Length: 337
Image 1 (cartoon, rainbow, N blue to C red):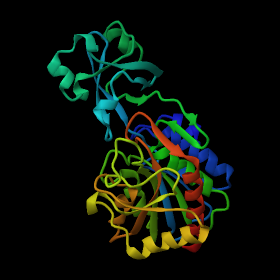
Image 2 (image 1 turned 90 degrees about the vertical axis):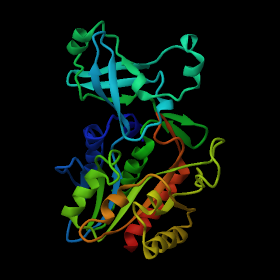
Image 3 (image 1 turned 135 degrees about the vertical axis):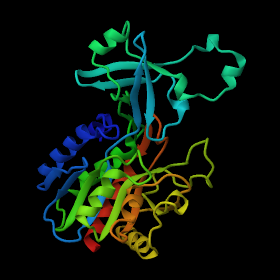
Image 4 (image 1 turned 180 degrees about the horizontal axis):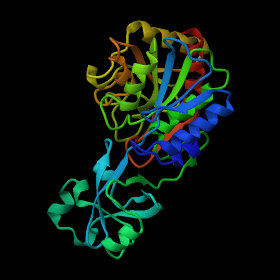
């Protein structure tokens, strides 16, 4: 989990994560490859219309848009990021010459005017300081337009069974797939997907569905845990430590609406394994289940998610018990489907 969390993989540059997954898949005895869309695909034996489980490998991040004369970087956001979380974060800039340490700079509070203090943070007013004297030195360091930028957040244990780190959305899902690899039945595909964070319909999973033609698709993702002081139960009723969330509706029905039959199947498997589960319907946001559901005339899809606090920020928090319950549930679901 630590390796996956600390690996860098902003959308379109998931290679570092994909290599970790390929290594683990192959050690579990599976055939594994990276397809043309950048997905890491693994299976024991592949036939027609497999059952496919997908977890997206990409994370939210930034991308270099402009380097000014003084060597400071302006950037765009890749994926949905709350601007408030960006100020003064330590970041890593990935270049063809290696990685660079950077800090997201802003005007210090001493110099802010009253109206500036009250104004919402705007990412367009922020910049990245990499310690370059000017644009020429930044270029020598390897900085170019299009370089991706990740948050420099270390993985840490918290309390007895909780942990924090970057990119838990969705490296937790990637970790879960790796736990399913050993003893995988025939005609079941495990897939680390690419570019989920940059489209309502994740590009990697959507493209792979045309080739694989799954009979059913299960998105293994994370869900918003609302069990902290800034959230009300009606906003996000899912909590840490109470088991995986079964997502019935995504993006207020603009995304995937799981069939009642498939929802019931997942719930039945959870009950047979005696693991807790939570039901949710989501106003905003979608998973790869939405990406796949409308392919080839329609594919029965559902998301089974690990509750995670503070997703789409520079750090998330998860719980071991939820992951263990999700693995048990999905193993049962794979056997029965």
